[in-house]
Amino acid sequence: MLSAKLHQACAELLTRYPEKRSALLPLLHLVQEELGYLTPESMEDVARLLEMRPTDVWETASFYTMYHFRPVGRCHIEVCHNLSCTLLGAESLLDHLKGRLQIREGETTPDGRFTLGRTECLAACDGAPVIQVNGRHYGPLDRTRLEELLASFARGELPQTYRYPSSAGAASPTPAPAGAPEKILHRNLVDPGYDGSIEAYLDRGGYRAAAKALGDLQPPEIIDMVKRSGLRGRGGAGFPTGVKWGFIPKDPGVPKYLLCNADEGEPGTFKDRQLLERDPHQLLEGIIIASYAIGAEVSYIYLRGEFLDGLAVLERALAEAYARGYLGKNILGSRLNLDVYVHRGAGAYICGEETALIESLEGKRGEPRIRPPFPAVKGVYQCPTAVNNVETLCNIPHIVLRGAEWYASLGTPKSTGTRVFSVSGHVRYPGNYELQLNATLRELIFGYAGGIPDNRRLKAIIPGGSSAAALTADHLDVGLDFESLAAAGSMGGSGAVIVMDETTCMVKVGEVVNRFYHHESCGQCTQCREGTAWLHKMLKRIEQGGGRLADLQTLKDVCRNMKGQTICVLSDSAAMPTESYLKYFREEFEAHIEQGRCPFRT
Image (cartoon, rainbow, N blue to C red; front, side, top):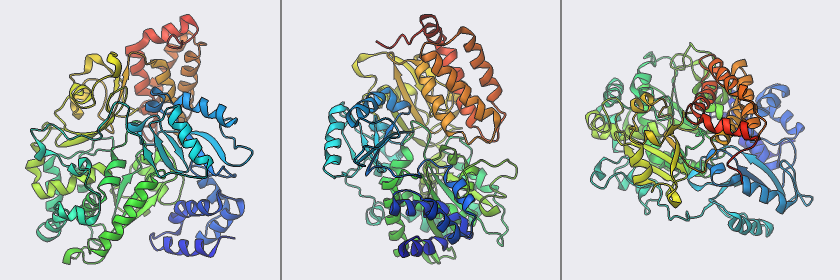
């Protein structure tokens, strides 16, 4: 039977949602934290509490990777094996852990102390290679630092998240050019004296934009202002934010919702995590203004389940905002009533897609919906819903306070403003860098991230997260704006820039990228479910030396059949980068096949 404490927690959770089932994921997190894993009996109890069938609870829980259905060790060690970490030695760390602990992946040591496994991108790529232990991140690691951590764990100590300084002395993040400091929006990210509290935020002019919006502007005026600013979504699609808000029906009798997408899962991306951990009130102020603009009285922050530090920061910030009257009833003396809740995800990349996020928020498997209808008409609980990314919402207070024309003057005419770029891989100074969108890849990689270590040559660049097509050194002078990257055959995506030097095997890159998309496909669509499996299988075979020349044409055929055929774009996200690897680095694929091995292995 679930404890009285869990029953009380469930009762509090149910006050946040109009439908009981929405409390499923957060309640399962609480059960697992208390029991260590989800037992059949505990899931039956959860089903009774939420008036669900036990089979529905099991079906939903098994969709997500963060829930355990058998005991795990007191230290659950997971090695990130996604692209940025693989480039910097994650596989060597995993092999070392296997030998050191004398267990294989998925096993637990006989004393019950350690369980070892792999995990996908942890949105901590500036600290690659990274491991996660009981939800806490540690990196960048080498074998010496890993041994230090293991010794701590063996003593029963679990240090707080610790980020070792980069061996190159990285300063992350860094501001844009010194000649234009007044144009930087997220100045608090680079202020070591800023603690993210509401007092510090108010001292820097925080919540003035909310007061202006609620006191001086009508909702249509705010929507028009955001349209004129040219702000485009910073989550991946780059859709104009004001246009999206304009789709929300104006009927005052219909409940409306604002969802903040904080489920940062695109490999190589870690800017949203830093924005919400370092400056949570900037995000909350953006949510307040956006909710007022669309007429929402409830907003949910769908937070990636692995962001335990972000969860603590947001809960503190929400308590501070309620205590100061920035959330709740009649905010700042206006007629706006707004409640904001954090809803923790449970490990599924697909929930970054807005309709899958909505399904997950409703307590279901995170499977994308067929559109139309679009979320602006029928979103969460079948009500009009706007879904915006963390960085997108963090821009809103600056636009309201300084004006649409000021924001539109930054960047390019079609890609306005600044953007926080996450740079990882083979660079001296990995980190987040805020630049205007008229900057180039060369400025970002060699001007801010310090270039390639050891004077190695640049080989490839992924400019918008792992779903973006790769570019080469010939593209260094391409702009970082949406249009320039599209013209070059790639996309801005999530703003994650992964840099690879001449030692990189692009067949291995293809295998790692497609392993991820195969793992994260929800399985609804045949082209995605089977296509991602085929791509990964063929690329793995080529990497291991068993490929055939005919495989290269088959890869291209599979990619062509995967694009534009599915409910969401995850299938395209696997196909497009694979096509780019074949386009620019075909000779490497052929060398693997002709030599019967990976020529990059010694």
